[in-house]
Amino acid sequence: MQYIEGINRKSKIAFPEYIDDYIEEDNPVRVIDVFVKSLDMDELGFKNSKPNDKGRPPYNPKDLLKLYIYGYMNKITSSRKLEKATKTNIEVMWLLRRLTPYNKSISDFRKDNKDAINTVFKEFVALCKGWDLFGKEIVAVDGSKFRASNSKKNNFNDKSLDRKIEYLEEKVEKYMQEIEENDIEESIDREPSKEEIKSRIKELEERKEKYERYKEKIEKGETTEISTTDPDTRLMATNNNGINVCYNVQTVVDSKHKLIVDCDVINNPTDHGMLSKMAKSAKETFEVEELKALADKGYYNVDDLIECEKKNIITYVSKQAFSNATGEAEFYIDKFKYDKEQNVYICPKGQKLYSRRQKPIDENTKEIVYRNFEACGKCEFKDKCTKNKKGRRIRRSIHQDFLDKVDKRTTENKELYKQRQMIVEHPFGTVKRAINILGIKEIMRRLKAKRVYLTSSLPKYAMQLGNIILYAA
Image 1: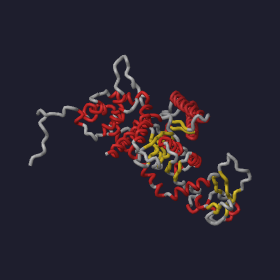
Image 2: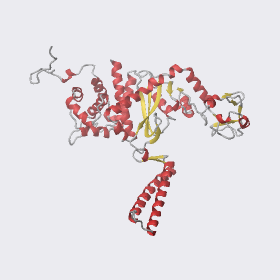
Image 3: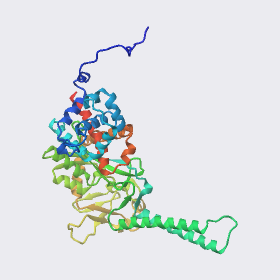
Image 4: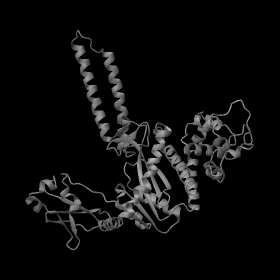
């Protein structure tokens, strides 16, 4: 039996007369072409959106944008590989009409138009809205940490600077002692010369001066942390229980087709304050009167939840479980029950904790403290309940009634809340997988905040376009 054989390379064959005949009617590149053609590049702020009257004509930014979108959809992000694709990939040949821009032109386009490319994402969201691809009823908000290039050694805060300055002072003092000892007696074994020691002292003092400048900047309140490589990054806890210097990327995703409505990059290690911001952005995009927002316990912040309520955004957020100092689950704060009629807390062993507040509640009041030191002093379970010598204190937010309302609403709608992970977490998984596969992980680490936004939004944008094509099919 023979193998399936190819044609003779020197035989004459008849190719289709038109390059358009190579591209099927349902090919995704046709969607890219139609979408980019619909954009007003001048209004979006693209460089060379209007051809120059003098000099060598530039490439049309629409063609280069098509190339970038195609590249991210097909896991091609290197400028050199994109250049090669213009000469070897029939889909790219069709998309760019046989244009073959040099890799420098391709990379400069991204560098010169990062803000404009971000605006394209918003235009694409508007297109999705026009195609009725958003449900406009339920959104989910989530954040993920993206590691930066900045190492932990090059990240400084008040405490770390104190340690480093103290260490350098000890080293300088040690070297000064060595100089004195060398002056008094000479050793048979070779000791560092005065010149070597003075050189080391000078180096250490220069480092100390640098750290003192950092400390002065922090003390002035200009910042709480200093990262020397990526100034916008901060030290953040990551999912693997480690700590790294990262950016915090936020997204809000619609439930209908799991499409991203908006994204943002922040350097706050926590997600506090972002629920209202991202949900309001989605509500304004949808132009609806009411919106349901799902989020995990990282967004459980009373001020943020109240802001959502004011904007008619109904929140479903998991409650944070706070442990006590001893780690005994039996005495966690949620085991203390509040009696509204008596205005007391009842501990797991039946004792009442009272409010001793004498001052009236005003706009500056954040919480009310409940305690019963007399009962705690006699309680045999005190050591399991608290490490405080006097006894246990329970702090109740003045907005606790509102928080109880949110907790009750979330508990009563468990089936709705379970959708949160399915709605919002898969885009991050898809984007991070693409980042690893595409080999742009190291590039992302070397970008500042605005460029991280660009690098994180482009894969999301390309992913969305791919999803829409699948839905259309």
